[in-house]
Length: 76
Image (cartoon, rainbow, N blue to C red):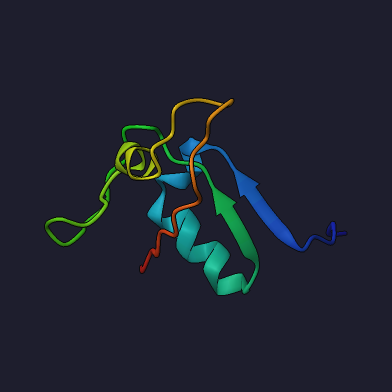
């Protein structure tokens, strides 16, 4: 007997696993996967390519001064 669910949330162990992402995508289920803070992805030169760069672009100064929201568009 299966357990019904609407979304998958996983830690950075699964966030880096391409096969896991492919399998969840094939199920048509929404998902959120964590990345290690050092994770980088392919990007055009001059574009945001790491989570650290996204935080810097948002001018994040800490939890008391998080800065403005910055839209980051991922494709893949």
